[in-house]
Image (tube, rainbow, N blue to C red):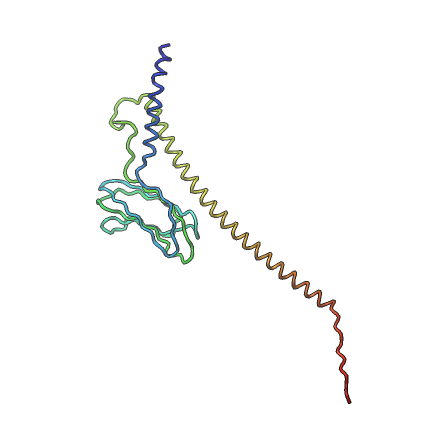
Length: 221
C-alpha cells in the first residue's frame, strides 16, 4: 500500500514536469522561415547578436530551377564571414566576435527565369538546460530527471524529423505538380495535333474521290 501511495503521489508531479518540458521545447530560440525568391532578386534578413554568442544557419532550396541559391553572411562591420554560390542546402555555425546586427542574404540574381522557394532555420545561442542547475550538479540525476532529459532529447529528434519530412514533402509535391503540368500541356498539344492530322487526312481522302468534270466550251464561228 505504501509503494502504491508513493507512485500515486509522484504521478501528478511527473505530469507537471512533462508539461513544463513540452512548454520549454516549444520555446525555440531563433527563427524558422520559408520564403519566395524571384528571379534576379536578393533577400536579406537581419538579426542582432551579442558578442561571444554562437549561432547556426541551415538552409535548403525547396523548389525552382536547379534547386540552388547563393548565400552569404555579413557581420556588423561589413566582413563576409560565410559565402557559398549555387548551393542546394548547407549549414553554417559561427561564434560572434563583435556585437551588432548580422545580415543573412540569399541571392537568385544569377537566374533569369527560375523562381525559387527557400527554407532557412536560424538558431542563436546555446540551448538552456531543461532542469535548474543541471550543468553544475555533481550528483547523479534522479530517475524522474533522467526521464525528463530522455523525453526532451526524443522531442528534439521528433522536431528535426518532422522538419526534414516536411521539406521533402514540399519538394516532392512541387516536382509532382511541375510534372503534372508538363504532362497536361503535352497531352493538349498531342490532342490538337491529332485533330489537325485527322482533318487533313479527311480532306485528302475526299479529294481522291471527288469527280472532276471537264468544262465544255462552245466554239462560236
